[in-house]
Image (cartoon, rainbow, N blue to C red; front, side, top):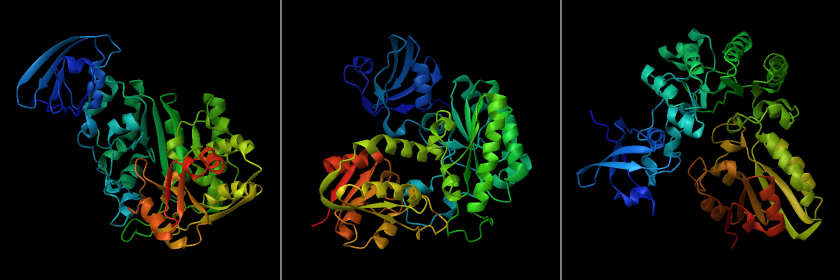
Amino acid sequence: MKCSGLKIFMVVTGSIAEEMGLEKGDRLTAINGAPVRDLIDFRYLEAEETLHVDITKAGGEEWVLEIEKDIDQDLGLDFGAGEFGRTIRCINKCVFCFVDQMPPGMRRTLYVKDDDYRHSFWNGNFITLTNLSKNKLKRIAMQRLSPLYISVHTTNPHLREKMLGSARAGLIMEQLRFLAEAGIEMHTQVVLCPGLNDAEQLDRTAADLSSLWPSVRSLAIVPVGLTRFRDSLYPLDVYNGEKARELIRWVHARQKAFINKLGHPFIFASDEFYLLAGMAIPVAESYDGFPQIENGVGLTRIFLDEWAEVEGSLPKEIAKQKFVLVTGVLGEKIIKPVAERLNKIAGLQVLVKTVENNFFGKQVTATGLVTGHDILNQVLPGEAGDLLVLPSVMLKKDEPVFLDNLSLAELAESIKAKVAVVAGPSQLVDVLNSGPQAAKIFIDQSN
């Protein structure tokens, strides 16, 4: 069956594609006889100097274009939102799945269980490999789709089948060995569930994964997250401070052993464990380049180091004003010392508003999971000061909307306040020095 290809969304002005008469709405179906199924195929095949490109025009006419170009020259095509086609969905029934613990009424995309190996390569999403056929594994190897980010959870095949609810889950070490032999770099994670995949099971997992070094470059340990919406789901416990301290001591001991053996720490605990344990965040060098920053491993260290850099640029005095810094329960431990330092600036009063997560449940303490309605219910009109400052992790990356679909504008309107969103210490200091307009997003609903 002929590949349907990719529908052209835009043709770059002055590009090869424009010179060849390609237009929006045309479909590119093959290059040099190979089907173009998605953007990865296109980028892989486009790199050749001599191309035979199969095109189906919007009107149905079929073209074959012969193109000679430099090896690093692109054709000038944009396929828009359809560049990967349909997302490959998760087939698992994980006992800890966060999507299964969400109530209705949130952003539609939050209910999509993405387990797409292409998104893992392109965007750093974690995948389980349970839906990968041998042909897809071969494609990864042939096209060198590296690095990949893989949710392992345990290397015990029977336990992994139980935790992921999939008969294919037990193939994990066989799949990882195949990818390692193909030269694919992998970063792995374990969502740690007390009494299930910890203790001797975690020892086994760390040993098995480190045996594939350097192909498996890192292992992140993150705590299971449980919401209040767990009726009829597998019974799980969360980590408390004591258990978190035990885990961190275990991680530090393993890091020392791996440094001696591999010359690399290999295993990392997520920031949430350190904050929960009340233990110091490791220095930047301990993260060895922050290989899993998107997984919440080292973000706090980056924040602290950035704050140390910009602290020296704080003004000694500003016009009298009151700022309120919003954070989640765990984030309070990091934000409070920042507020204490800011309060030494003459004319400035800074308060920290710690928002508890009533939406998901008080067991959820991460700042990035604070919802708009929880802020709305806990910051009353008149309590926002001259400026309410929110961290950008509370909002969708490309749109000022909270997890519960409340928009930033709706929040500002409801509390009748000026609201600014900052991405980190540098932006916070810019707001102090230059005014709210220096923030990433600023909305004025104070009148």
